Image (tube, rainbow, N blue to C red; front, side, top):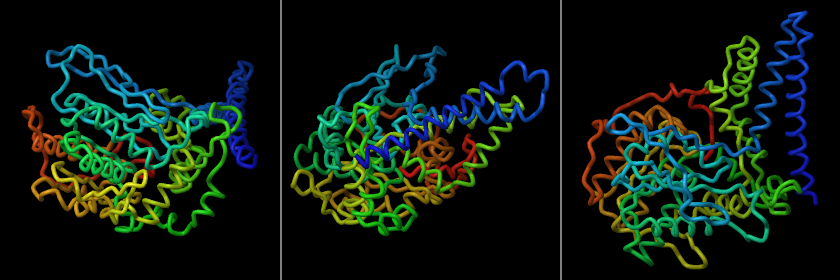
Length: 443
């Protein structure tokens, strides 16, 4: 009951702040105050507007809202999001572009499960759709999954990836963003050992903690400081009575969000203060930079306790992937068995979540892959978010990733813009959001 009480307390605080914001907005917008146009009432209404919106977004799963894709003859093609495989803890979804033949590049984009929904990759999806037949892992919020559905840890996550890759077939290119990078590597190794013909053509790992000890960050320091007993006691709670997963042990999204904001509290506080003043002056809008960013950033999901704890213990503390000692259902997973899959790693020079060195370690682990099938790219000046959704991704990294897929595919290349050389240096400080690339989303 202690865990449920804590969980419901957080939800009560969130709900109360949403109500206070709505009350302040409604009170300040009363027509009677138009007779006394004091700026205090405008500020009160603006504070209420921003507060109500912010706290209400914390329990909403964002929509994908993918814009139409421009066709070769100038027509627009509507994008439909369709589930292909449905599982209790996550689905494989397909972005079907209406009235367009599937692109030769079949890509599985593995979204992180680290407190945000897969829609965190919306801009990544939008950028890949013109050139790819795209599939994405859509992980479910643990608070909405009944206890009767069982557990879900990193071994189950890995087996989900194995099933998804096997379903899509051997002509698939897998792109794993951040947290799932080591598990996507393990899933590929399982297929290499058990079903070599089902392996993907290429595997691209972007900013993931394959070897967390390769470079220290706040995330790795926190994992090393805390014992597993302390972590379980402080972080794990039971889903409250409001949701279908009542009683399930989880790492709550609201707790994760608190740690996200604490990592960069001054920047976030400044962004909200500026938005309140913009709202009071009538300069804010539904789709402005602040709302677009925070509508996604504040929408958090719960992770199952076993997934969160096993990630910390086995990936960060025991370094099972980094030392090639990972097991699934008691069977060793030998990454060295990967021989036919092309491997590429992408890192950001200013990434303070998965620092340079953590992801590129995958290339040494893949001892069976010939050097001509390996590639690495370090994007100077790019932070964590920028390497998969910011300016660096759009201008430099995306063309390199598409080229890498083509170079290791039996399919013909498609014409597109010429790729940049991997030693090009592009700053990633111009992302269209109110906090730049310092948003610190630890995926």
